[in-house]
Image (cartoon, rainbow, N blue to C red; front, side, top):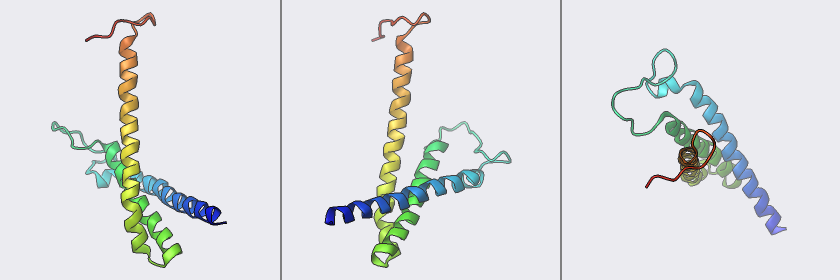
Length: 130
C-alpha cells in the first residue's frame, strides 16, 4: 500500500512537471523572437560574436525551468498546500533534466560526426586519423 502511494505520488509529480514543461516550451517557442531579441522573422539575429548559449539551449533551459516552477507549484499546492516550496524543489531538478537532455543531444551529434568521418564514399570504413 505504501509503495503504491509513493509510486502514484511520483507519477503525479512527473506528469505535472513534464506536462508544464511541454506547455512552457510551446509558449516560449511562440514568443522566442521577443525573448531572444529577434527581429521581424521571430528568430534571433546572428552576430559575429559567438553566443554563450545556442538558441536551442536557451529554449531547453527556459522551458525546463518554467515547467519545474509551474509543475512544482502545482505539486506543492496539492501535497502540502504550499506552492512555493514545491516550485523551489522541482525547478533545480528540472534544470538538471534539461542539462542531461542537452548533453545527450551533444553526444549524439558528436558520435554521428565520428561515424560519418570513418566511412568513405563507398561505405567502406577508413582508418581513423590520429
